[in-house]
Image (cartoon, rainbow, N blue to C red; front, side, top):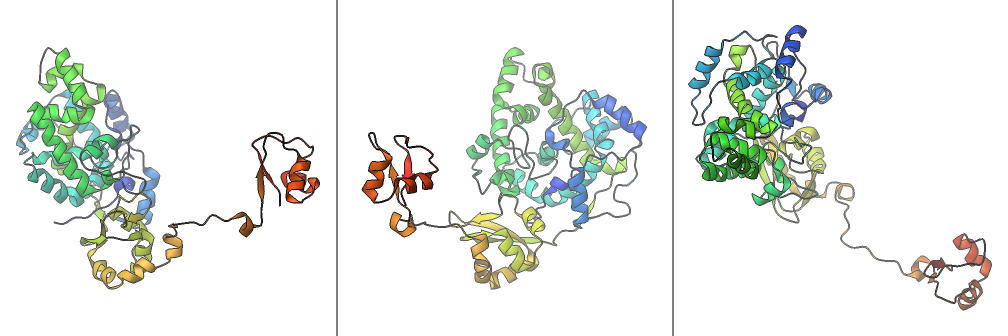
Length: 410
């Protein structure tokens, strides 16, 4: 399977590329709709930083044209019906609002995501096919995370599929101080496929599944009860939270724009990434910088290929982890494996297994814990030192001492 992992946190710019008067019109049309945080992230400075590191090649036709042609409702309706999908994709004013947003305000972001989609497509489709799910669900991360594996919401959802910590753990995604498998494109995608399948087994309606994925089954069940048992998303619409009402129209529009982007003069970005990648099993502690420096791999690219390692540390002593490398570096890693593990261990693997506690004699310092009835004179006499020495070592001005306090004697 062709698997390229790249962190698109720097690729999701919302810089408008349309004429200013068009932007104003779209903002007025869309100001009352809600999108998940991943689609509205402000990453202009990170985007420029990414450009400066030459991970994106800005071709002459990168963004196509700066504006989108006007499209009649009947054309939108007909195009949506031509998408080979199991999930119902009706057209209405809400869907149009999101299509308009994708083709104007989020136009450049769509160009980025089209390229990101090329990297993740095989992963998404393989997992969805494994669980016999509709392949059009591959565009769900478009509205969840903007195809950014590092995306994190204010509520704590993380990764391409925006798993909350508790839900992620329920589906086998490990999260600790060093590793967050919600960021792992393969593991998180398979977990999401399992979750979507279980939701479908509950509701037997894909629009309700999408809504439940956004706000949780409990909220959907409450809406169904309030609507006297109604189970059609569009009839439940006014009983749902604001973001959930927007979720299904946004999903339909995402399928539309990822299919008909050419009709709106949007061209995918050209990406400079490895021709291919492969994984190596790591069963000892390893730091990504050890790999980067010995194998001569850009550390940012290595992190992009392995987004699940939060601090660059692979805790291979806890369990075996997969390290993803460009194909042309795999054989070199295997040949130099011992050298890589031992490279600057005192810097990158300085975590101590044990630490000796120095005794009073070895440190030369002696302390005494004050008991009830003690005086400085009595303590000084016991240890053969002067009262002035005890006062000097402990910064005491008078003779008063506090019960329970440790005094340095020597």
